[in-house]
Length: 380
Image (cartoon, rainbow, N blue to C red; front, side, top):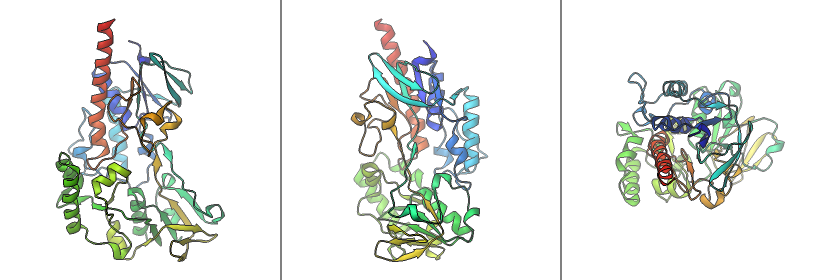
């Protein structure tokens, strides 16, 4: 079997895990990465980032986290872990190869890359759900005279000291960046456009992820009822500080609209202490400030757009619309899609943890490909 018969796209955690599992199955393959190193996103995330999931549930296949690692490893520790994983599992990406398009043609795929075409029998897309920066079209943003960056370019608070700073977005990155700024004395506000669930990173003495794992087999409605009761006790009513709990349950919100809760590591305490202001949706950006829903206007010298990402798979995969949901994510995770020979790994972020999900999906995909190859050989 030729090494180009199986192509894995992306050498982040998902791609590394798939490659390691394919090697374990004795399957030659090509692992393609457009950047010059493995796990580039983890090298370039903001400085204070730690895993929001516990190391116990965040190891890739065949490689648990070492005992000496903290419960929530730092960004640098995650990058080192992934680098060691690649080295120890003999994963060898082809760096600097940008995949431009994947199309099914007959019994094989046509994969156009920056280093030339490939014609594999199987393709595993592992580029992650942070493939493309999401920059909202905020009215008046082009006329703002201060600094504007997406959260992907944020590193630390140093450039913002002395500047009134607005963080637009209250996902996990937005909430943590706002906290990072507040801890260094930056005058910071955070936009919370609508209702959002808040979950402490540790719940009743254990990682909230562990609670999610324990409840994962229960029916969705029961999971949401248990979560609602626990969060009423652990978090309480935050509406007086501008954070309203949604009517839809936590797990249902993740599964139906893809919105994950704020995994709180101290942001709520900073909001209650008045070190982070919560503001409603942006109505218009002005030359030196922002007008918000309801009409209030506040001055700012810097804006950080913590407005997330999208997978961007429609740019790469031919026929993707037929196998995707409205949020641009594939219908099938960790299994063969309706396009024969095509698999996706690493596009879920459930309460049980994205890395844990990758660790389940990667060996499943490798086994499925091995089975398909054996079937083809036995019928030849």
